[in-house]
Amino acid sequence: AVKRVWWKKSVVYQVYWRSFYDTDGDGVGDLDGVIEKLDYIRGLGVDIIWLNPVYESPDLDNGYDISDYESIMPKAGTLETLDRLLAETHRRGMRLIMDLVVNHTSHLHPWFLESRSSRSNPKRDWYIWKDASEGGGPPNNWRSYFSPSTWEWDAATEQYYFHSFAAEQPDLNWRNPELREAICGMMRRWLSRGIDGFRLDAIALLAKPDGFPDAERPEDIRYLTNNPGLHDFIREMNARVLAGRDIVTVGEAAFVTPEEGLKFVGEDRGELDMLFHFEVCDEMPSWDMLRFKRIQRRWYEGLWGRGANSQFLNNHDHTRQVSRYGNDGPYRVQSAKLLATMLHTLPGIPYIYQGEEIGMTGVRFDSIEEYNDIAMRNRYAEEVAGGREPAEVLASLQPLSRDNSRTPMQWDDSREAGFTSGTPWIRVNPNYREINAARDLAAPDSIYAYYRELISLRHRHDVLAYGEFEEWPEYADDEHLYVYERHLDGVRWLVALNHGDEAAELIWPARMAGRKLRLLLGNYPAPALGDESAGGSKGEGGSEGGA
Ligand code: ISL
Image (cartoon, rainbow, N blue to C red; front, side, top):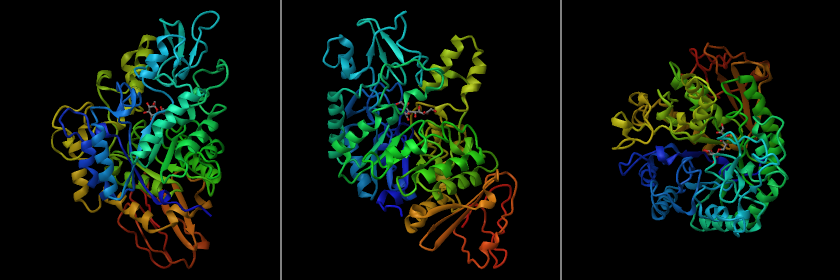
C-alpha cells in the first residue's frame, strides 16, 4: 500500500513569474503580478505553487545565477512583496514552494568574489579551484551544460574554477563543511519565513568525482551527475533542515534511472519527497508512444509503494508540450486535453507549467537577437564560430530553445496579450488573439475547464493518487493507443487514450464483460456507453480520455 500524505493528492502549478503578469509596466512579470492572479490559479484548483527563482541575481540565466540568497531581485519585488504573496497564497488554502539553486551561485555572489580574490582567502575552498593540466589548459576535457568547457581560467590567481553551467555560474564545493552550514542556515531562514518547501535545482550535480578524470566521450555530460557522496549531502541537508517539518520538496535530477531515483525519494531514505527525472523531456525529442510506455512502466515498478514520482511534459526549460508531444494545429484543443488526461491519471504528482492549462504553444523568432536563452545563445555562438552557416544553426536550435516556453502568459486579446502595459522582455507569441486565458475562462468546454475537472477528480477520488497502475496488455505494443487502469479498494478507473491522428476503436476484452461503466471525462463529446458496446469509443482523428 502507498503511504498517504497530503501532497500526493495535490497538483502543482509552476509560476515562471517573469513571464506571468507585469504590474509596473517594466515589461517583466513581478510578484505583485502573481498576487493579482492568485485567484486565477486558485480557480484551477491547484494546491501548490512552485515559484521560479526570485533571489537577487544579475539574471544571466533568468535567476538561476543567485548573487544573494537572502534578498529578492528588484525586478520581482521585495521581501515584503514575497511575504504578502505567501500570506495571500495561504489565505486561499494553497502552499508555496521556492526554487532554490545550491549547486552553484552567480559569479557576482560575495562568496565567489572572496573566493577568487586570492588563493589563501578563507572562502577559496567554497568553490572548486584547480591548477592547469600538465601541458597547460583546463584540468580535464569536460563539457558544461551551457559552454564548451566546465573550466574557466582566472588570470589573477592563475587557477581554473569549475562550472557545470555557464562560466557566470561557478559550482559550490559541497565537500567544504562551512559551505554546507551556510547553505543549511539559509534554507532554515526561508522555512522560518513560512515557505512550504523547495524545488531543488540541479540537485544530482552536488557531488564531484575525485580527481576529475577525463571523460571518454566528453559530449555525454552524464559525468556531471550522480557522483559518489551525493546522497550523503542530501541526507545531511534533510537531517539539518527539512526533517520534521510539514513541507514538501522536489529534486530536479538529471540522468537518473529508477534505481538511482529511489535513492532520492525512497520513503526510508530521509532525503526528498518527489523527483523530476528527465527520461522524457531530455531524452525523448518527439512523441514516441512505445518508449513513453516503457519509461512509465519502469518508473512505476521502481518507485511504487516506496517513493513518489512526478508527472510533467514541459517546464521553463522544455518547449510547450502540445507543440512538442501533441498536435498544436487543427487538434490543439483535443491534444492538450489528451496530454492532460494522461499526466493527471498516470501514477505520480502532476505538475502544470503556466499557460499549459490554456494550451499555449511554442514560438519561432526570426533572428538570434530575439532569443534570450543563455543555453541557446552560447550554443549558437560556438557553432557559428566553428564555421557553420548561421541560418542553419538558428533553424537547428529553434525547436528546443528554452524560450519556447518562456514567452509571456497570454491573458487576453489586448496588446501584448494583456501581460504588460510596456514592452515585454521577450516577445509575446503572435497567436495570443486565439489562445488566451480570457477566452478559456468564458468557454465551458475549454482546456482550462478540462484541467479544473481533472484536478477536482484527483481531490475527490483517492484512486488517482493511491491506486495501482495496470496497462491493458492488449495495447501494450500499440503505437497510438495507451490503455490502462488505476485501481484501489475495488474501484477501477479506465483510461483510454489515442495519440494517433486517426480514429480508433477500442476492442473490449472478454474480462470486461458485465462491467458497469460510467463516463467521467473525455476530450470529445461523450460516446454512447451501451450495455454491450460499452467500450466503443471513437474519436474524430483524435483521442479519448475516458473512464
Ligand atoms: O534543460 C535541460 C537540458 O535540456 C536540463 O537538463 C537542465 O538544463 C538541467 O536539468 C538544469 O536545469 C536547471 O538548472 C539550470 C537552469 O538554467 C535551468 O533553468 C534549471 O531548470 C542552471 O541553474
